[in-house]
Length: 572
Image (tube, rainbow, N blue to C red; front, side, top):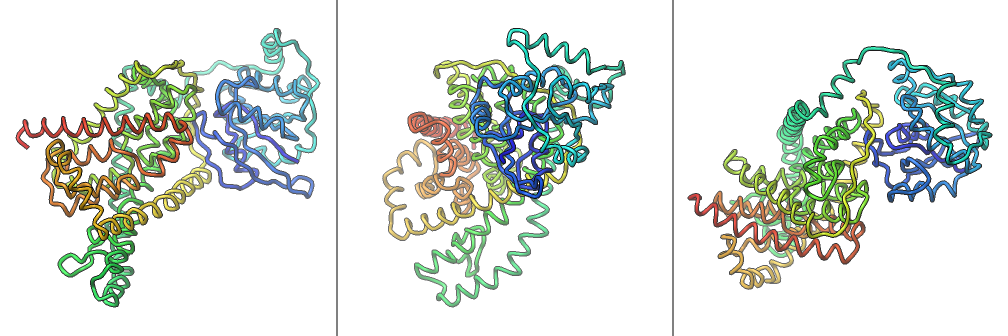
């Protein structure tokens, strides 16, 4: 038996899935999270049945890639569990009636039942079941209420008996609502007042600014705390003696020593500068970057699950339209601050090729991942605002300017934003922690191999003299246009594998503040890491990926050269 969980976006399908199966699943509180379906198992009548969390859809006539997947999965399902938001019954019944018309066995889960009660909405469940002709079960996925009954009644699912003509569908829905639903008058709750304030054109930007400042302060405190009090001491106490002993066994020099341990700094191993596989290669992703990644994804998970991100999307919609996007493009941008790979994957919530191309290109050029932000902070931290402001102000201006240009040059349409506005709610912490664990696990699995590969590649290229050759070839561009030493070419080479490692390679070069600013901007706008390129290829195709890459090179070199001249003129 294959059980399909189907419903509109943001009705709690993923949380129901997690409750029924106990499997790992990303459950988010904004539409479009589950672009690719996930599977699990549940025991029904003593036998295991497959449960599929189908992408959210508003109907069975696909208007996006996610809805195409939903319709395709429907053809392969045995039983459909239609997850319905009990607080928005009228809108949700549109899909319900379409599912009943397929003659598939259906059972309806009236989810968010607790919120309906809190809003003064009363639904006659028995009468609704009679009218639809299929089982109806009130549920609250966050608390688990009704989930056992839903599981027990899966065996009762059957094709609906309700018949209607397509042109009279909404009249049929209206008739159902008149019979089963009553709404009592009540005053707005504190949560509803807060929800209104966060999208109001006057108060909304101030709330967004406060959320942004608070978020990054939390991320900074978590990252710095884990590095200072946990991971750095752990590396020095447990790992440093082992690699020091290995260095002694290898005679403190030689090609193998340089690859595994790296160069000794004043006769000692320096995890930040030695640049060996077992020193810098492990220290950077695990001790210098992972703490910030953990903090970022924790904050992002909370913002997703309390329901703030859709409101942020509505708030920035006017700005995004000037860039050829709509408001929900803020979601991949924010994900990209954690890592560009999930940010690129999240562009699937955008409907048109134009939007996806612009979003992916802006993401790769102008949105540094948290790993890279952490490395930039390490390089420029001692300069304070004098170092950070020019870097991030330049990236922001590039984001705006490049978006405006691409809106005019890239053919296609930018549709209006259509997004459900969920009520603010407390997260289901078990699902949130699962989501956090999955993202952290993914980062470790994907990032560490690329960092090690980058360190290995650079060491081999140095040993073979390739870096020195490239330095001579590109010296005019590096020194005259960008104002950087020729040795910086090594950072550009490894930047294709891991940009955060490339930024870290600038530390031993003793660059001036102006050079550090220019180099940080160029490396951010330069090619994304190899993993991001794989995503760009999957999402855009080869032709558009190559176009995007050309834009990256032109923008990186042009912005770096212009910034170098402006900073020189300013006396840096």
